[in-house]
Amino acid sequence: MNTETIQTHRKKFLREDGMLFVRTDGIIDTMTRIPLLVASLIIVVALIPIQSSFGSPRNLDLMIYPDGTTHVSTEIDVDPLSIDHELDLFGSTIDNFVVINENGFLLNYEIIGNSVLIETFGSSVITVEYDIHDLISKQSRVWTFFLDSPSDFTLLFPKNSAIIGMTNLPIDMQLINDQNQLTLSSGETEINYLFSTPIISTPVEPIDSSPEPNYLIYGIVGGIIASAIIATIIRIKQKTTKLTQKQQIIPVEPIDTEEIFKLKPDIREDDKEIVKFISNNGGQALESELRKKFLQPRTTMWRAVKRLERNGIIEIEKKDLQNLVKLRKNIEEEE
Amino acid sequence: MKILALFTIFVLIFGTTSFVNDAYAQNDLSILLHITTQADKQIQNQLHQVYGNDVPEKIQSLYDKGHMTVNSLEKSLPDDVKQAKKDFLTSMKLFKQISKMISEPVVKVQIIVSHVDQSSQLDRLEKHVLTLKTISKKLDAKINFENIDNLLIQTRNQINDGTENPSETIIQLKSSIKSIQKDIRDSTSNDASDKVKQFLTKHLDVIKSKLSKATESGADQNQINKAHELIDEIKALIDKHQINDAKIVFHELHKLLKNIQYSVS
Image (cartoon, rainbow over all chains, first blue to last red; front, side):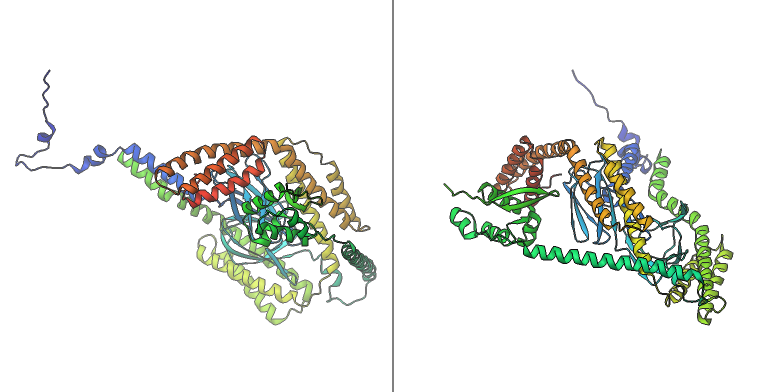
């Protein structure tokens, strides 16, 4: 069967003078498909913030307590394909740290200086909460909050506090349970505030010197509280001294490492150093301490510890989610 | 169609930023006046408390400037946004300066400060316990918080009454919180381990296929062999339900993959 192909479209675009005319109007329609283009652009634009937002907070909420400690609460998108996530903290004095993933599971973490390494293992969103003492300083009666924030954030002030200085313009302000909450932009922010009710200074206001019977009561109450505090301090000091004395008295049984090395002649030189350190440390040390001492990565130290455990030189105990490495008292001779 | 496409692109590119700016502009103006007025009143109150009618000339002059700036800010609203913002920052700077000057001679009572500290410390611990309760409830961990609740009440009473030193109870409270955290972890350890197990198993398959490709493209065979050994080790640990150990070896594998320029992803 013969088929004849007739090329008609070429002639269709030829002008009378025979010149080739290319219609620019139809190029997009013929060469690309607009819906495809639009869809691609939407996907690209939508993905840009997602890609760049790994590690940046979805939200960041701060709350200042009356003593200047700040509670930080933040939700962060993390890479679900990653095994861990390193998060910069706003300082190094951290309390009450807790991190959970989107399923509500408590995640393991390790705080190192101003950052925390969180084991995410497939989590896509983590919620971190902690208290920090580094964000507020106090000079006389004026409290100063300072933060260089990576994102916009809200800041809840304590009750009876009044803002008296600010370096930035706030985005929003709300009143929550008689407490001011500001929404602030990312970047450096300094805010000064003081307590409008003079709780702290009233008893010793030096201006009015007229004698009033109330001062006597203040004096007595102040005296009692002062005595109580002095007594507490003395008690704590005594306790600490006793404790120190006790600690000094407890005899640290010297463990003869040479004896261990005789019994286990095949252990590696670097493992011997670990054994010596544990021995000098009273026969036990945390695995993290060993890592710090020998500047070894986590896995290397883990392997060394496991090796020593297999050799019957040490035993591993769990203590506050950490590995406590102890020298065994009865080490059997290698066969 | 072409117009629709262009419009979509335009909205996508310029839309978000302009909406954000509009929201900011609408919100901030009345807030600025609210904050400065509050600060103005506070400073006035402080001046009256500390100096009565004999406010030092320098401080009075600064306050007058600050007060005038607040008035100027009020007049600038709502039209002159630029001037309003400038007035806000100027007035806040002046009030801060005055406040520091006022505070200089005042003697602080450390006793009451320490009292506030303990109260705040308890507030923080209470909030932390609340967070743990929420986590426990969400995970259906069935943790008993009764002891910790009693300790919280006891500490609060000690602080309010001032008759007994709450330090000991606070130490007990902290210890109980640690133990509760451990209980939550223990009660959910199976589920959490399952999740990690799923993650590791899924990624080991991906890594294996990538290692095959790496072999084909001539990557260092020793390192590839080592990676395979680690994979086998992880699998063995998973089979033995030693998930924590499996995680540690996975870290090692991850580093090795980086060395042979293959990421897990």
